[in-house]
Length: 245
Image 1 (spheres, rainbow, N blue to C red):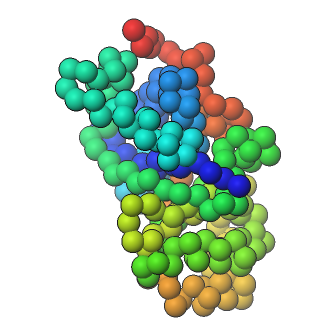
Image 2 (spheres, one colour):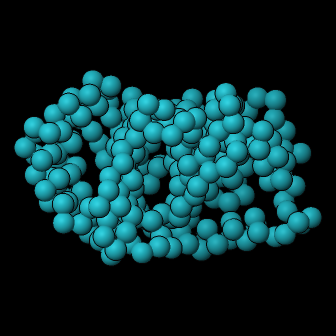
């Protein structure tokens, strides 16, 4: 049973600073957030620009439930002059690398594994498929169950592993996010090449046709310190020329 809550972020990058931002996010933010907020890093990924917006990064943060998230937000929203100086310093540096973004609060399907379980399982991906699915209002949770029952099998035959299944909170239950770990680039290509002829995938799409309004799939690549790549959470030992004080 996954009782966590997640912050999902699309981050727009300034110029050629994507690698700098990803390091700043993982090495310079996450260790302190683990200590102060009980926040874990689920992943920091670069968006493969040929499949989506560029230059862009996707972050996913795991929070200890709604109460834990409320406590974290209370520490951020304290007004000018009273903000945590460590947080202010980090944000000031991050502003050199990013120019904006769009965040969502997302809830996991009960069977969607938390990050430390995925790490313990040895979960890895050469790349990751990220799907943003628009469904008719009220159908997001039903869609995740259908993914579990039929979609995971259809794509699993190509080696794709469903490692994240979420619905967007604070809305109309009309959006879902799916995250697949793909073992090789060849496994990605085979599934995409056969998507219009593989009967199991076609049947999966037919089952979704009465409630899915739009599906947008992009590809993500692990940042150097993304937890599924290194098999652990980012640590202070990963920091280079950064001092929180």
